[in-house]
Amino acid sequence: QKEVEQDPGPLSVPEGAIVSLNCTYSNSAFQYFMWYRQYSRKGPELLMYTYSSGNKEDGRFTAQVDKSSKYISLFIRDSQPSDSATYLCAGLTGGGNKLTFGTGTQLKVEL
Amino acid sequence: ETGVTQTPRHLVMGMTNKKSLKCEQHLGHNAMYWYKQSAKKPLELMFVYNFKEQTENNSVPSRFSPECPNSSHLFLHLHTLQPEDSALYLCASSQEWDGPGSLHFGNGTRLTVT
Image (cartoon, rainbow over the protein chains, first blue to last red):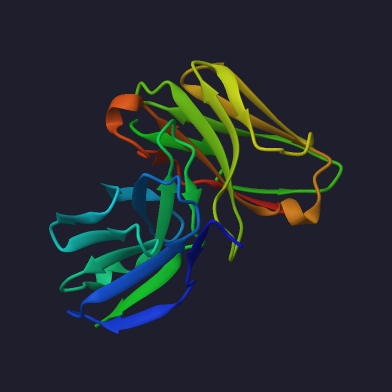
């Protein structure tokens, strides 16, 4: 079983839709959870991170973690074509920067 | 130039060749990483360097040999690779005060082994 599971997609939505991207994980030692965005032919860039359970909002993006069910979500409101990318979730135990990534979900936002 | 720069962007090599990937970061970070990204697979951590010292080798085959001459430069020397080594190789850097899990990635080198 992979430590972080993610549906690879592609997920195709119309412009303006609310997007929900999800991951599950198995490692109970994860304390931090990250979402990275990767555009085609680019490296991943950190969108946001969350510590433990709860929500975190940044503009149109909301990250949510439910440690009881080991479920991580990223919501994108009013999605734009520029949001089209692959979204990678990752977990991190307390020390260092040794991230465990999911496979990524490809998102396409269409006009 | 800012950020993390990787060269070359694309590399095609035969199984008997020797080549090197280069990474340079202009962020003043003290940790650098090599990751492998293959289709339909999670990012795989290969090596970690902190203050030029290797602190992580994630059971990587010896045909991959990293080198970190200083905190700004990282190399990955390649020799006698296999076709399954074809992938996107990503370099990243980080600094503690950027927050947990805050890696700055380059745009990668797309490697094809023929």
